[in-house]
Amino acid sequence: MVRYLALIAVLFGAPAAEASAREEISGPVAAEILRVIDGDTILVEARPWPQQRVEVYVRIRGIDAPELKSKCHSVQQAGGDARQALEALTKASATIELVNITGDKYFGRIVADVVLPDGRSAGSDLLLAGLVQPYDGGRKMVPVCGD
Image (cartoon, rainbow, N blue to C red; front, side, top):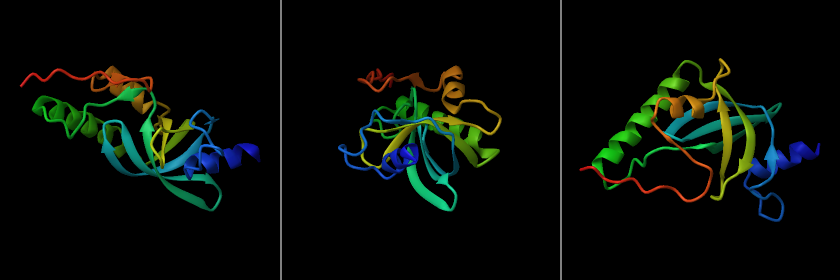
């Protein structure tokens, strides 16, 4: 019961006193992808327990995609490539699993590992393809603009 209450707090963005970003729900939580936002963020409809659905933005744990809104054209292009790759990974089945779920530093968003229907990790696939950089939640590297 405590785990479900913590999940509610994480998914609904409860105040820091109730759910800190460090609390973790191991999952899995089934979710349907509503939209790919960029190369490291998706909007899902999570189903944390029977007859309950929650729309939430999910930042994929462990990766950082190039920014789509960068002033640098080559970074924008790389960001578009990462988003297209994530769309392709998730196109076969809109249903995924979220595991290792925590709150994010931004209100209303969570951080989670995204597990595809065949058991692969979306983040690992994007890393292996060289489309994203590893990210531990700290300071991001500023890309050098080549154009």
